[in-house]
Length: 548
Ligand code: AMP
Image 1: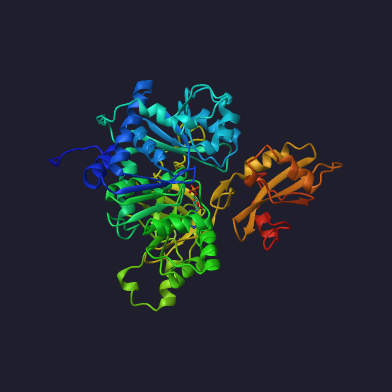
Image 2: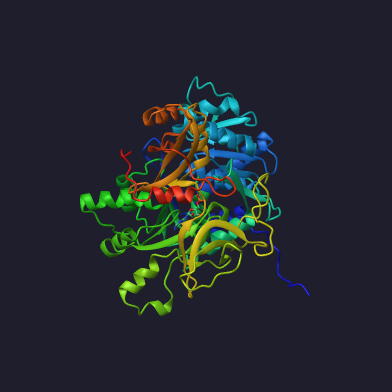
């Protein structure tokens, strides 16, 4: 017997319809690339998102057609989030920190048909537009009178002109909630980046779980500041969760320095913020140097890489802000776990509570997790056994877009339906996850992945290089920085500076290694693969010769 309840699809447009009807006057404040603050309401946003949908209809973009963005956190980007997905197209957020060639590869792979960009990224668009044949329209996110003249980009329009001619009336269409709504590429360890294709259902369920009290605890009384970029896993779902609960949204634009973020928090009465540790490190430095205090900020989610204990302490003890340490990944939409205490922990001494808060936390309802040993055997939840972390749930990836790399859900008996995260973790008896390591070889610098293979391939294209392995070494500011370990061809010469110079123009500046280590030979494992674990071991305690 089936239940007799209505079957209403979970669609992203329903979030916007809800916030417009119930919280239409709640504010959205954005810092524009021009530097000024733009203010309007969720009702204004909804009207303009409908104009976006109309503009896409007028262009004849089909259902599931891809619209790419190269944009900061701002109101126009938000309108695209809703207008593109709500009308049945797929929002593809590109990471502007990649090199123009990498962005072009991704645009071609995704077959993007429209690409919307902030003027900051005009040079990147100029460098790549000729190699992006699928893109029919380029939209500069600006007023008509700011459209750059003589840019050389064909079919370039200003966003305001593009949507300006469209009426704000539009009925959001109904369709299968499993339809794709957005996509985000993640750097894999093997070869090219891979795309995670989110669905309306996965996004709405994730937004719902993220807002719960033991997760981000969001409400209509909050002013939410996603410092995490909208091009990094949909700013951890905050543009959706904020609409679901009717929160004020504060979008920082390109001004990600500590001073600007602090000022925005204070002037806009921000109660909740989210970002990677590096952003907060800069802001705490600014606050300490100027003896500043928060007047409204109550809690902040920190994730993307491990949050240093000193940061949790500083926020809590000095500034009275609760830190919620979170673990997630692009393939998990991204939230998997968040750290909040249980009732029984409230009577524990401060030190013991602090030890729990360092962990990445408990699984959200909807995310199932387990740790397994190298043979696939499930390991105990004792807080000691470390194993490969596998996850499962309605907002966990099933397969990558155009999955030419094969099924990510290695279809063996142990892993059936479980996604192998590539992280190594312990889980304690209370279900608190702690990431101890990651099995991937990519390097994370300032919250951004650097593909070691890309960096190695560039070194290998130098005539004097026989073998190259790129590994991350500790850096106090960026978490990790890449170092390239090189074995030269017999009789060939290349110096450190020559090799580093060789990277110019071939990789984005921040992806270029900080140093070169020359070795006689790179250690190889039994199947001929480079043993990066051994290299990392050898480089433990390695001091970068030059701070970048
Ligand atoms: P991304 O897909 O770029 O968001 O990167 C996801 C990866 O970042 C995870 O697989 C982890 O290796 C790492 N990560 C995310 N959050 C944390 C955290 N709180 N602590 C340690 N590593 C993290």
